[in-house]
Length: 397
Image (tube, rainbow, N blue to C red; front, side):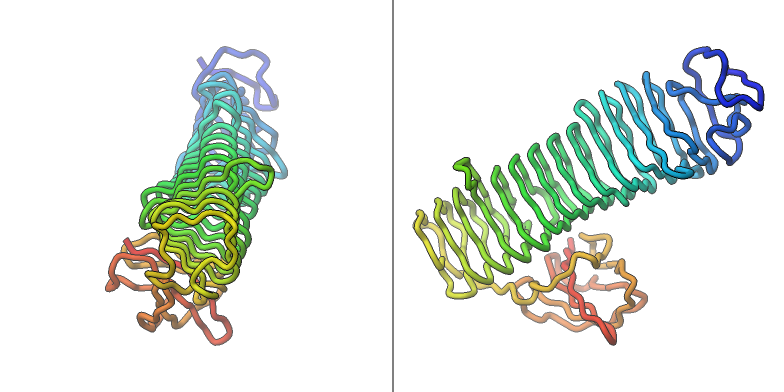
């Protein structure tokens, strides 16, 4: 049964229980004439949006209610407005376009974004709440996850803190990023300005992590074979307060400045360090460690297991020291075709191996990189025009 209201009323006088309400035209959400019930929906209704609706009030979804924005629709804040998705079964489903100032999922409320979702201030995923993103989630100043967030799409945020469960298989770009919960990266790529882990962080499957400034682990971090981390400044593993810090490197870690191990490192992968290296903890396993300033560890007051080798594979991080985080290509990884996401227009480029060897020079047309002819692997591509030279890391799979 629908809720009836006179056209000049903002709110219904009587509630008749949870119903499904669908938009029939574009307009303000507080205008009863845009809804098929000629009413103002309540927070526990199932609201379906197929038109351009302006959210001109703050809103809440409660008591297993829902909002579904279909691909033909949009729900965009008119002014500065926020939305709360609260309670088990309450959902916000976006397949079109949405925008809000703040978005909070609490007490089991959840949702999915498969479209374009702009959040201009904060996104909060509370305990018991689960959110998934397979579209574009962007504009976020602060992202806090205490429940679970699954990102298989693209996520752009400023400060990111995960104390719950974060699953990543798409692209995530962040400023200051911290994990005190469980973070599972199973694919895709991550660009961070600064990174710190005090929880459990696992990199498996495919993908890589690129950190512009400092990288620090004071928890448990595992990097699987075939995966890579680029740290453009200092790399630190250890807890200055006396706690444990375990780094399991079975892939490749490249550091463009200094390296310090203050607790425990093992694995079967390799390290490539540009500047000073220090070990005051335990280095175990059979990984290869290469310091470009001399091969071995500059200062060792800890323990180095006999199975560790030094520069047996050789490495160079000189090519990648100036890679910028403001330039992106997509999809990445790809089978060989990459689109450049930048305001600059590039005309030529050079392709290097991760060890710094020049593979070929290329011509770039319409900001598209065609590397279909190269074998599966990781490469550094230098992009150039008349005034700019920039570098990006790509993966062909």
